[in-house]
Length: 449
Image 1 (spheres, rainbow, N blue to C red):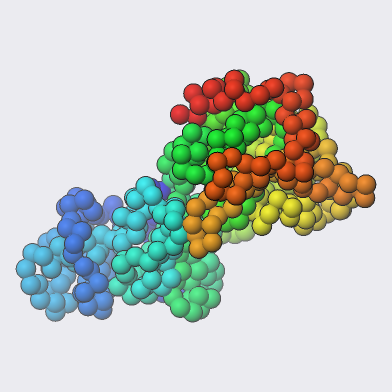
Image 2 (tube, rainbow, N blue to C red):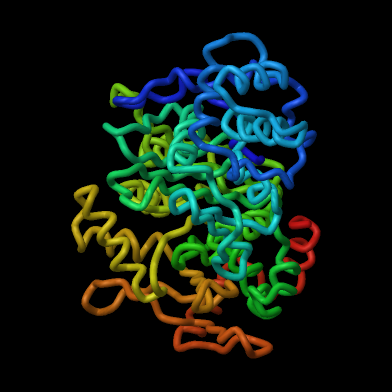
């Protein structure tokens, strides 16, 4: 598995009202229990959950390696009769699933097409392979198995997950984003949401081939990046904002120093000079948190050519806009928004959290942020695609609005100019910006591969 393979401490996470006696130390795992050496066709779900739980607790209490002999002995002592080598290996695999990796979710997370794995209790596991959600045949033995997996995945992150703190939001080693909710907050059973980061960065040519962009849209985005105009990539959940931003950052001039500020490391541009800063949650005592706003301020002191906020979601928007208004050109980030027209209102709401008034926000926005690149996804979780590029401009009432300059319906061979097309051309052909797409397109093609 990518990321979740790093096991947590043997004691796991504090679990109010529950014993840790049955938890096994990954360091005691016999090499013969390696997932690759066990038959994937064996179904641990057919075993008696009570017997499996008793065997696990007896093996954990016994000390020493978790070996086939130890499991067989524990089975006999618990009154379980072995019906041959196949059943013994089934029990071994079931124990292995609860000690290391992601257990029955391991094959799903190793599938390069999978972007999300969702668990709704022990009998429902869904995945998204880019074409919408589909239910899998994966099952857990019982609710306890899902709960133990959630707690074990959360343990290495230092986050608490128990009856007193029944949810967790964390990043696992390797970049997988974990969210888990325990009963009774989730009455149907423990829920897990795992967002899998892309293994590599796509080139603009690949995005065109996949139908995410039309050729003229790719050329337009090349000019946008080269112009050093500040922009946001927007869209709903799962529309591919991070994927597109990683691709665009791979097109940044090789001489630029790029500062990435993220809540969880997801951006992975292919660029020679990238510096990463990641936020940190508070510890179990409620102290030690490092916020995105803290990191944006630090990034501005590190001689950045471009400051990038992976996802603008809170008060950090104030510091980002301040940076864009003080000579830090080419800044960018992602933002959740239903449409490009909604972006000013979304930024108003976020700035309000930091105490920045509406008038001040629009003043900063008008002079700092220039463009919005908006993505959509087909109904039912279908294909992701670029929808429009909009220009942010200030009206006579002092408020900033987003006006479409280029739009694409997803079917036509090319996009169409919008009402703000002339303003977009002026931004992209300003002094220091490229006059056309031909030269930069060639450079991007080489840099993004």
